[in-house]
Image 1: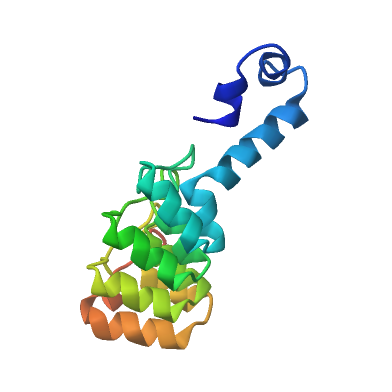
Image 2 (image 1 turned 90 degrees about the vertical axis):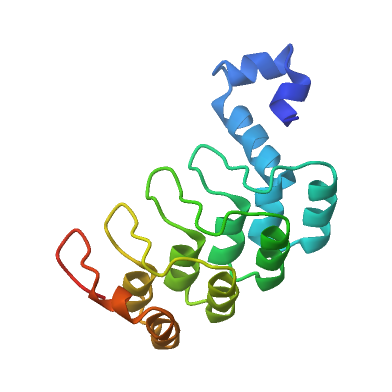
Amino acid sequence: MSIIGEAGTGVCKCCVGGAHKGVAESLEEMDFQRSLAGAAQVGDVRRMRELLARGAEVDGGGESGYAPLHYAARNGHVQACLLLLQNGAQVDRRTRSGKATSLHRAAFAGHIEVVKVLLQHGASVEAQDSDGQTPIHKASMQRHPSVMKLLTESCPRACRILDNQGRTA
């Protein structure tokens, strides 16, 4: 249960109702930090194991649709990614607004070891986000040649995919 949901009366209702927006935002931040996504973001595998054992949703995401695997991949936490995947995380789950996969996030950040793990678990190199970009586009934009090479070797035809602007990677 969330901090806001646990308290739910008196002061917290006032805060959530908008009287003290900063307090409500702080409570939401605390909820995130206590969540599986928050633990994945910082690579706290011990905490992640505890949360999973207590029934945390492996693919549970917030408003943005970011799942714990997106956070772990974006921040280069290999062991966190492995734990999530071993517990049934959907490797190609997409964010709500940008339609990005965890492979998009890892490729953009240049985390080659995470990219390898995601590929070993069946991540799609051809997945296109809301801009029509593949993980190869993301690696190219950020000048991560080793990630580009790995992705290209994994799926050569993905290099020919055009984004919404008509560009290849």
